[in-house]
Image (cartoon, rainbow, N blue to C red; front, side, top):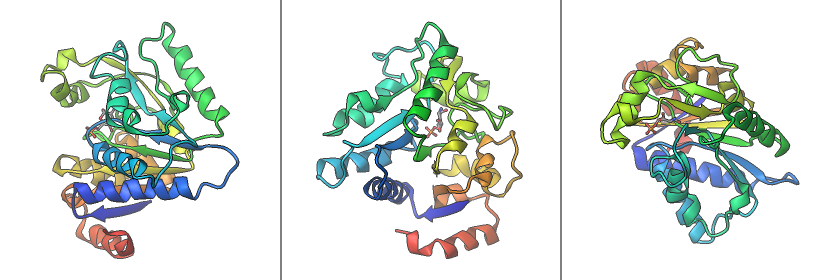
Length: 263
Ligand code: GLP
């Protein structure tokens, strides 16, 4: 696992956006580049930069297929808290050459939710698998909506949200945890692990414990993100604020080995 520590949130986002752009530019295979994407506040700055590059003519999405990580159950596209709405509002609507048919987001309004999840896994396989999965992390270490104690081998499916997550996410629902949907559809931890490369954004003091558990803790379902220690090509992009609970020698180690990647 690589840990690339940037000075602040803006630089973390610039690094992540540049990394994604490099991967898209260097993609040589005879099929589109397949990109996994998250929602949440962490990726907002990355999306801004990707849009800037795209509109400046420096990055094309014409040959990119996307799969989002998760979606709330019971929110339709018009709902401004649905992840469908978020993705269009923050990214897709602003790109000049993203093909709507290349956008995949789980449908939390599907009649048969499990069938929707199974079809999603199949669609990922049909595209040749995910080349790069960008993600965020919950304060409890959750990855997508795989809460602590979800199997580290889980596949796309229906997830019940913990009370903790509903409280944290209530900031988008008038600060009322009861208004946060109690279920979501989510790719599994196993689905993320299948990606050829994983890039996780971790920023801010409130993520310090989750970052330390992810990097230094044992691989445990208690912190789903820790499974990335077993991935061959995983990068944690973080800011200084999130490093508050890393051991000093861990922090120094990554500052040293990744110094060429610090912006
Ligand atoms: C939600 C999403 C996760 C996301 C997490 C962190 O629970 N399901 O995919 O990583 O929130 O969000 P934020 O980036 O806003 O801290």
